Length: 106
Image (cartoon, rainbow, N blue to C red):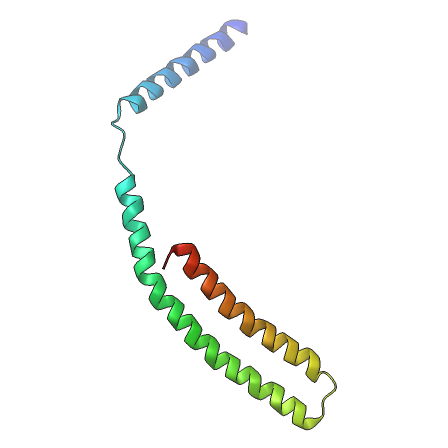
């Protein structure tokens, strides 16, 4: 029983040594060019996507404003809660877009 365990351990050790030496022989790849390329692509696309999100947010914000106006005119009791939620969402949309632009250095 011990001899079988010893043989398994030796085979495992040899497999690890062979794999390690084969991986160590591979040349190290220069990944900085790939990372720089990806960063430039994200920066190029981010500006357009950011503007698109702001436009969609403006349309949704207008729809939310109309909904609050209708509730206000109908005399609903939860107008203040609706107004605070709508204004908070608009402020969050503007601040998150600005923060992401600063984060990406645009």
